Length: 223
Image (tube, rainbow, N blue to C red; front, side, top):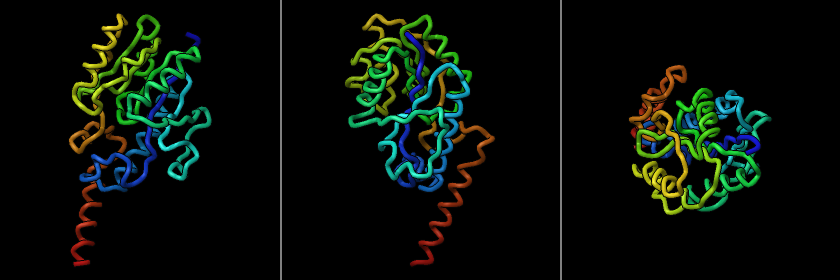
């Protein structure tokens, strides 16, 4: 391989559309604010790792109104996720990067534990293995690194279920690929996961409670 690329998958942080499973706890505005914070932190850590080029694979397409006002570092290149389920979109990005001669680390923006140090570990692992994975506590994975491509790694996976990591590892084993596992991490998907946010980010749960109380007060006044 010539080098390494970190591909960060992200949806535009729009209220009502971003982090929808957190909206009941936080409200749409706070959930979107958290999504934006996680996007910026993920890109910052990927750049700080200093071991790879960094790509933001966006949905909807870069340049659309949904991304207006979202600024990222000039060193980050933008691409479009395109159509299909998560597997199809990741497969397309992985195949493109690998065909260009680089190994690839596929990550999202939901895991604050994927810091620069952990990304460096993943990059180092790919020097001696075919694949590297950081499993998440919910049964999925927060990072998948590859030096080779095969569609079976992504096809017919039941996404957003507790079997994603196990199914993917089985596919990798069936291909005869060596896989290194990193430490398990926690995604921020639901209200119970908010405890895994870094303390320095502030209390998003408190912001959400305030937002929800205000909404309830406004509804009461309207009635």
